[in-house]
Length: 186
Image (cartoon, rainbow, N blue to C red; front, side, top):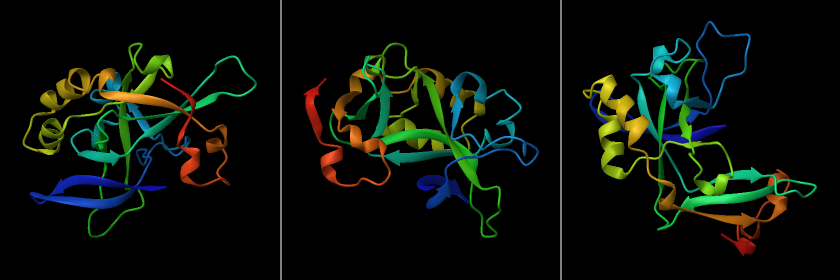
């Protein structure tokens, strides 16, 4: 799956469709992860090669499924309360004119710290627009980028979560009614 990704190359902002998921060329024994844990991403060997290749993945929302004791997990749609785009901190092996087979990216995730009504233990690191611009600045030291990812993501209060139709989990289904609020909104 390819997603829109903002990144800087040759001092210019680019928007490209990039494969979601990445692994180093030497990690052929595992699937390409789509997320990277903020606690490990800056220093672990798996993502070391792409840590300095920062990007922003803009999204409208994301889904999480929570076990509420029924036969199936309940899906929730999570979005900004004000309806603005969600700017997810990302890193990747980003496109060049000779696009390689290893191009791809991961979204950085953090501990949700009890936010998002405990729907999930991880969530994307979401940056405010001014921090997203700073994140993309390749002149910023890697240490500053790490601090932004670790400590300056938007708080849970910036989001709202809505129960949505259980049919959202079936890829054969489509339509706006799937993401409209169910009878109970939080």
